[in-house]
Length: 212
Image (tube, rainbow, N blue to C red; front, side, top):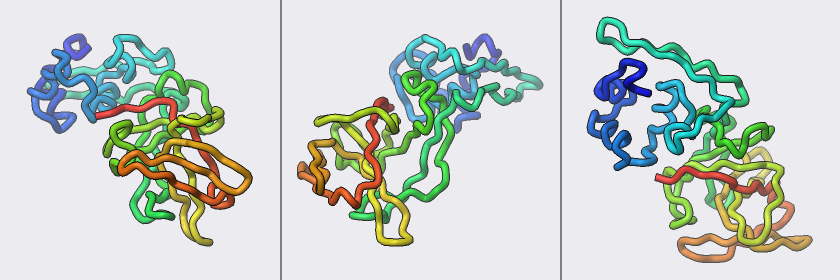
């Protein structure tokens, strides 16, 4: 695709703020899922799935890019709103020591195929290693907000803070729930996390991730 658009590895690297060697490693398969792969897909006018799997997301409209006077001049990818997914911004300082929701977006990225057509689906970046080795700092997880979850499923728990405080979000493994208590597992260090049911606003199942 890069060559079809008349772009050199160096031009792609410059636009992404990485080295030409990094682009070469992606194209040779040595770096399969670098953190800038979403940006690279957008720049080339293809879906993330096309870069990773060689299969196009039908909801992602390809966009032509051109080179003029040795400068890259790509037009904005023509994407429908449902071809993108919102990445919710989190920062430290939430309830129970977890991250809190700022109310802003960290990014808008190509939507994973299994979340096509799912209203209110979203993603977040993982900010610590408490769920390693399953998820590590910098990984991106995507959730289906209405899909049922069961014991052993990885989830994002929305935790209420004090009145006036923002909601916290914790990446955990669901264990069980009774009338009064949710029980989750944290992997590193391993421990059971017990939360009063009235402190849990929602639990959303993680259905896809990108790990780096």
